[in-house]
Amino acid sequence: MPFFFSRKETDPTHMHAPGLPLLALELRAPWEFGAVLPAWPVLQHAPQGDGHTVIVFPGLTAGDTTTVPLRRYLDSRNYHSLGWGQGLNLGPRDGVLETAKRQLQAAADASGNKVSLVGWSLGGIYARELAKELPDLVRCVVTLGTPFAGPHTSTNAWRIYQFASGRSIERETENYNLPEAPPVPTSSIYSRSDGVVAWRGSIQAPADHNPHTENIEVVASHFGMGLNPSAWWAVADRLGQPHGPEAVWQPFQRPKLRGLHLVYPDPHR
Image 1: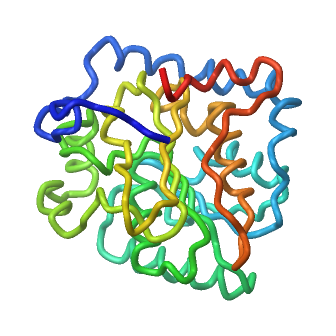
Image 2: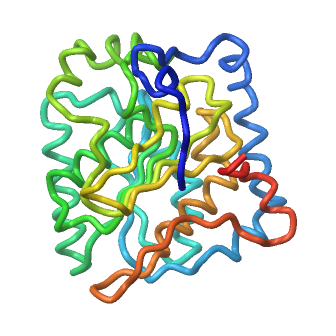
């Protein structure tokens, strides 16, 4: 989907962290999860999966417990979902990424198929970087509120990251080309009302080497994005894309089910 921004809007030096009003709106996250129950019948109309394995990575200072609701939903759509199995996500400490690679390899070996990767916030960075290193094992990547396109100061969490990981975020990011998309179909789900990550920091620029990249806007908080029904639908829809040599990738289309289109802002507005 095309996005048109001014030079100032796309320049990382002008990308600031969300202000206090948006940060305060993060308190709405429990209500987003509360919307799952009335939305459940509609969510069951999302594309049915083919049983392939999906690994879901949690956000900063979060663990697999936070991704249980999303994973249970994916299981209901006929996917085999897994948590990352490394406790709290305190950043890429020694051994974390190597363990994630081994898990990805083991999941692919066990199923005999490629594995999809879903990452919430910092977890999306892991998903993207794993797909860059091991693209032959990855079917697709979906991220939720992941800050890969802006400077570390474009989030309200960078100090927490440094405290939790014990590492300098500036030195860490120098080791990776975070804005570069993986060479597999990659979808970035973002919200303009994200109170933690500047939404432009989750926007993928068009890439000649991988035309199968896209940005999907939802109405969600950062803390509630992995619990938000509209985000769940988008994740299931992207995981349900046909796969194989003859498959033709299609960008996300807002569902036309009654009322559901209202939670996906018009990308051409």
